[in-house]
Length: 162
Image (cartoon, rainbow, N blue to C red; front, top):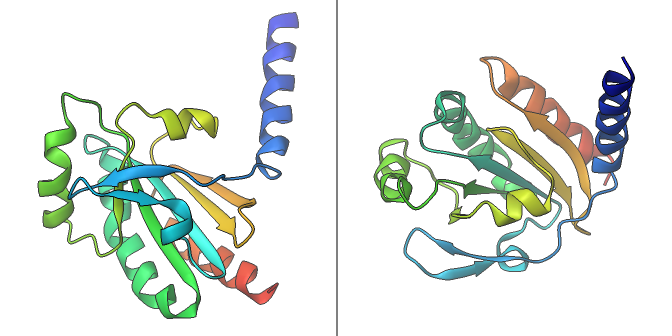
């Protein structure tokens, strides 16, 4: 029982701390092996960071919906950056999969999941919503059909605060 309480306390503390989390500038390679920075790609008002892997079925179902959200909000100061976390064995699948899923937003490679680990993320997919000063204002883990509406409402809510 004591172990359960310790784990529960840690989860609660880390969950509340996530809202105060900052995304510092980072540099990762894109699918053309060009170095790209967060500062270069971030949105004027909000940035969505989608952490995903090619082998993750919910990730692959979320991407077409994220494409739609990207198209809808791109002109409103919101950018979306896909952060693929495939390892060395499966990273060769990322570019063809991105093409087949018709990903319209930039995709960066976090092959050793260093950025994901720095941000204390552990699930695929995980979507971070970051404001213009780099503060994480919302986190969404997983994907089931209908989550795109939850994400859209949160984008609209955050934009209305600006």
